Image 1 (cartoon, one colour):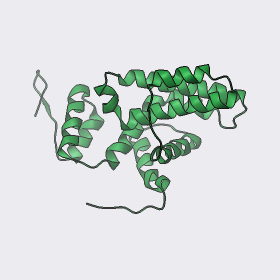
Image 2 (image 1 turned 180 degrees about the vertical axis):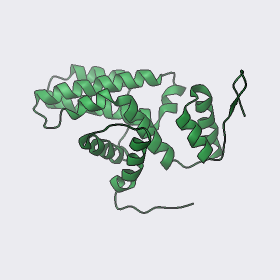
Image 3 (image 1 turned 30 degrees about the vertical axis):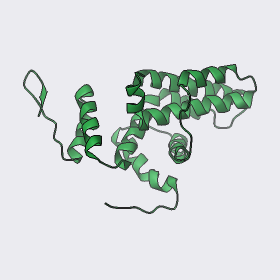
Image 4 (image 1 turned 90 degrees about the vertical axis):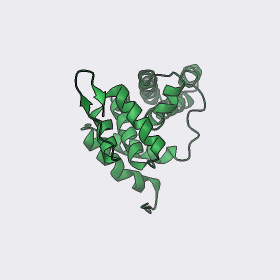
Length: 192
């Protein structure tokens, strides 16, 4: 096993995030790149989604104080984006679809942009980019996760199950990198 030393979490995630964004051919502003890198670093110590997304959004909508409202919407979007990228299986195992998480996260970021503008947050426009590109950014974070995750046999089986369900070329590449070569044959499209 190879162990890498990094002075900080941003240094650790920087190249991995850049490779993911490049592989996915995402057009991303420098501000969004910085935000995603910061999100990855912050989430190492964050509590995560301890409440359902719908509850977090409802609480944000019910918050009257403008700065707190902005903070709550931003955190709901951040939690959804990180969760969708790093813990998709967790949501799926509880019957929460990826599309639902993407929609709720994008909505949270759109609301964060509006709330940020109302309190003159200097970087409020970044949340519009995060909302519009939420699905792609979640895929990039999932790519970072795959690159940083330890590979156990159970991880490979879960990846194979996800590949079977989605037929994603990106998942096929990840399987091949782990030594599993999915091939679809014949009209039945069975996996070999």
